[in-house]
Amino acid sequence: MNTKQQVIWRSPEGEIIACFEKNKVLQENLVEIRQVCRDALEDAILMGCDEQQFRSVLAELVDTLASPYPPRE
Image 1 (cartoon, rainbow, N blue to C red):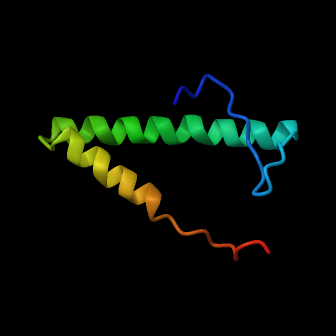
Image 2 (cartoon, rainbow, N blue to C red):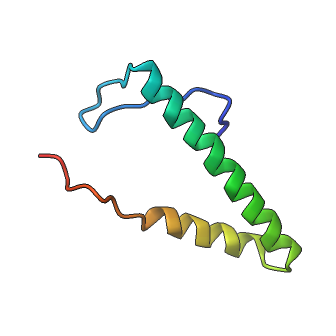
Image 3 (cartoon, rainbow, N blue to C red):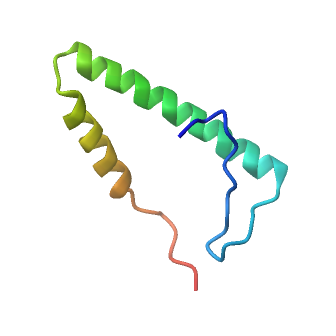
């Protein structure tokens, strides 16, 4: 995903999140996450880790993130 490209954020109901400030925060978060992940990937490779294994571990981390909020009804 290219973080320079704007993501169209949607609510769980599929409605577009139109608030400029919300979109700005979400986009800034993606830029920060991308940089942290890139730095961690570079560290792993420099320390001799397998790049594909690192990517798999990172994907598993994202897949297992738990929301601190109860599901919407």
